[in-house]
Image 1 (tube, rainbow, N blue to C red):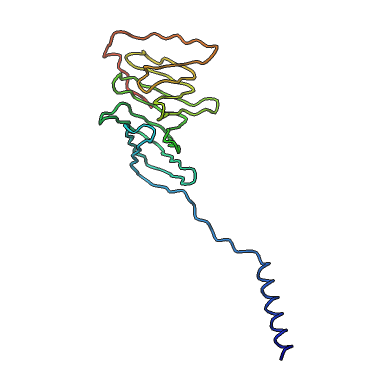
Image 2 (image 1 turned 30 degrees about the vertical axis):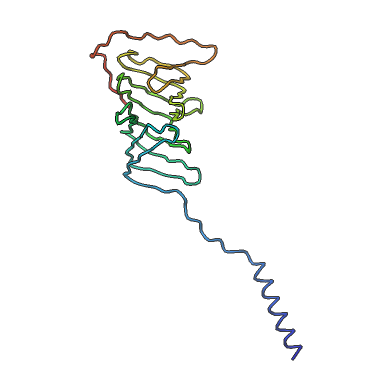
Length: 194
């Protein structure tokens, strides 16, 4: 009887050893990306509590792990402050990062008050950044068209406030020359072409 119990115990221990050495079956991990089609997105930037952004996008992807949102084919993004739209944006692809900053390779902005059109493009691996905390554009290459700037004034490496009252371009060792138009001429109004 004792011998039978010892054999049974040895079989159970042997079976447990075999089972513990077998590879685990991995359960498939579902994709964490949340995708939406035909979505409207509202952004309340923590760093700029007075601003509200609205976007409409045919395709939106949210990555919970990195806390980023990618909006594709944005045609009617808008930033409002105090209930008034101060500028609009359009972009083939716009990323909202974890700090609520907007990033993209090409962003077109229309400044409502000055009627200036900014065509902002990435260069040398650096994206266009709309920085919510500092209220500024950080742009590797910018072209401005409008009543104040004329037609297609180009600037490299721009850091400018949202209303362009603070404007730096070029960086160390460069100079930028531009002509600001002092008279407003409605015939020079140039709508943004994305």
